[in-house]
Image 1 (spheres, rainbow, N blue to C red):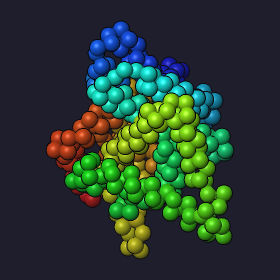
Image 2 (cartoon, rainbow, N blue to C red):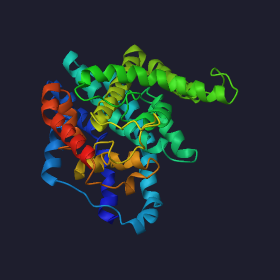
Image 3 (cartoon, rainbow, N blue to C red):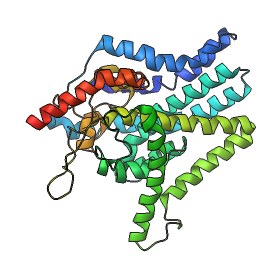
Image 4 (spheres, rainbow, N blue to C red):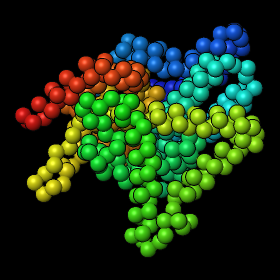
Length: 359
């Protein structure tokens, strides 16, 4: 990987930086409470505009250099750094929220901003970490997920989503014609329940009770409760409200991204009743340069599902994968308006299905 691109992954931390920037802007203009919405303006207006201006990055690391790049400690260190940044940001943001004299519009803007930033910094980075072997990276991933209260993702994503992706069994794979507003609450509820079911199944197969200390979800839940208690005792009820609200919003942000990543794509059922193997043809791909840097190349999602253990630094762009007409930030906004989403994306789904069936 080019050294400049490797350094450019530091832009990930430009996302959490928007929260103190918003507070500073508000200190300069105390009556402009719309500034609490600044991080959302940055992510969903400025980022897509810049994304389209800078264009695509379809370059892949040469196959003969993939192992060398994957083992470089720089890329691993950036993901591990996300945990202290996330915890520090939460502590500071909660304290600022409690002492700020905001009206309802300013309060909503701050909570939405923090939740979406958490979805990017905590959940997206955790997604990279929980796929890795060893103890340290999955531990950091679990703690990041606990910081937003969506720790079931650590279990369900690996043992549920990656097994059933692009089939009716997967709550995170949206059907053609399904709106994000229909999809979102069902995905959050079903995935949470499924995480506990999968962990209970694992423990029963080992001869242990699901209520034993071996249940990893209990440890992540304990971490979440400890954080919630810390916010309550340090910042009272408003602090607890902040902590709980930002977590729900972060989880919702993740599931909107899941909606975008797999909308309308299907794995075919084979003659033996099983589904075909997951490949790079079962996830939407986006090669917009800037948004990929801000998301640890999550938008190269097609390759991620084909090779889940592959580190973000060497994820490949596949030209024959279904291609989104923009980065995730632009697609996020589009998805919130189902008629527009269907007008833009449904023809692409149908065209891709037709091409796949004729191949």
